[in-house]
Amino acid sequence: MNTQKITSIITIVLLCAVIAGGAYMFMNEQKVLVKGDDGDYFAFFLTTGQVYFGQLADANDTYQKIVNVHYLQAPVLEEGISLEDVTLIRLGNELHQPEDEIYLSKRQILLVQKLSEESRVLEAINTSATN
Image 1 (cartoon, rainbow, N blue to C red):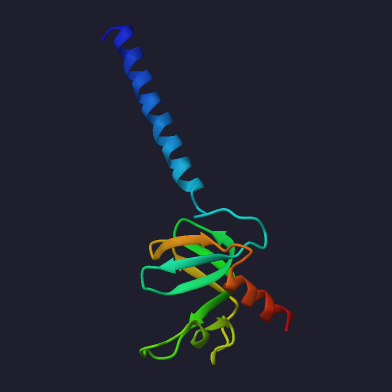
Image 2 (image 1 turned 90 degrees about the vertical axis):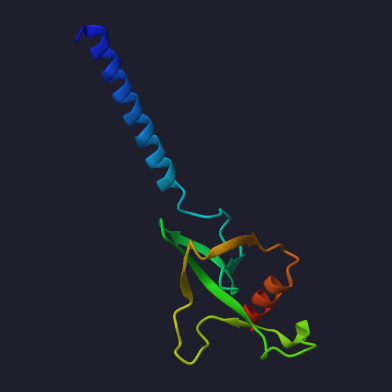
């Protein structure tokens, strides 16, 4: 082989290595699903139909950690359930007293929404925190 072919092959191999390395670094940087300021609350809608409200914490490739977690509890499905029948529960008040943090599988998270300042859920969270 001549020198020009060898140089071309080396250039192509190096270019492929740089592209692969860049893609790997980009994918590993995508650990957090959404970004928010400290104190922001989010709604996490799961593929199971559950909804959790909480603040972002650590994340890795597989899980998103949520702290200050709340969820909605409604009575057994009956006709005519109103919003007044739904209760906001803070994680940790259950019989088994779990810590107030959960790790959600990123594969199970369908949608994430930041709660607005006018959110009734955020208002209930803030009210319960002061009581």
